[in-house]
Image (cartoon, rainbow, N blue to C red; front, side, top):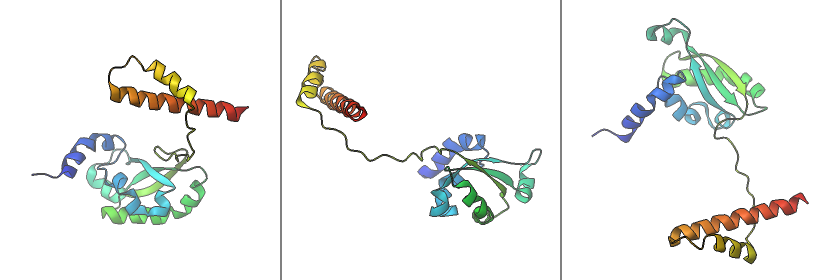
Length: 164
């Protein structure tokens, strides 16, 4: 019996290879490899190996790792690149990364959730939404749509009120 990890690696390998990652360990273990402080500021985006090199030569020359850093974090990260390279190469056990290229910009999945309160729908809004969902026979779907519609209309009303 094979572990779920084995199957997962087999499924995602083509996607990781497309971006130069021979396997997804660098992406999956990024925080453990570089530490919480660095991982909070950047994430690996792609690895580019020198052209015309076979896999045996990769162990000696190393790739260029492109990381996407949050706005304003690039300069501080540039000072830490030698330590980051050492940690990555120590993780792999060979000279996997020779250089790090830092690209500043919004990282995928790094959007911070805004904590804001959602306005409670007024009785008029609830009545309006219930009229619109009245013809739905499935009670669970009807209740979910009523909650969704009430929250959306209440949120729109609150935004309109703030804009005034």
